[in-house]
Image (cartoon, rainbow, N blue to C red):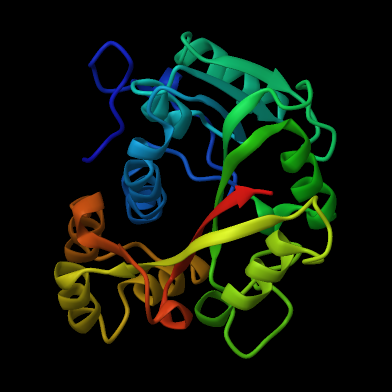
Length: 265
């Protein structure tokens, strides 16, 4: 079993694990490990960008990502709307400052943080422009907004309606860029410095071939059919690590997830 480290260095016990709802990714669940590592790799990628800076994670979920970032950041504040997630994060990651709040009405002063991290959240929000405007408000001049989201082209191909019932609107790279940039004549937008994609690395490409072209589909099909997983599939999923993913520019439309690095105007 591959699990997220507990702050004291021990593996989490069952009481430490936040319930899996389908809306958020939770560490410590073997069947969830592929998705957890696919999300975790983005946090690892940005650790250098948050070093010695004041960070807000907007939509912090279970809290594992904010905890990882707190090891190098000057400070990390979390905001999440879900009360159970907030209570869990406070209990499991005591060095974090955690607020319960609406992401389109962030409980922070103007120009109070250097970096906002918003990973795998924007697709859940009904008023995406209002959230981006709030990010602009609480960021200091020149601050960065780091945002990841499933790539609509590969996550829900051939449809504008998300297949995930928890998603309100999914985005491709151009749509995400437009959301962040806004009206180029307005001062309230962002400049997108980098648009990156999360891809399967060599070992996951081998597993794709092993599982009839897609280890993702192999998991989803069995989950939808409520079928037990073959032992080989369970072992392959449990063994996935962040090193099995690549984050890179170029060929972004073929990526699994998008990762935008944007700077406040």
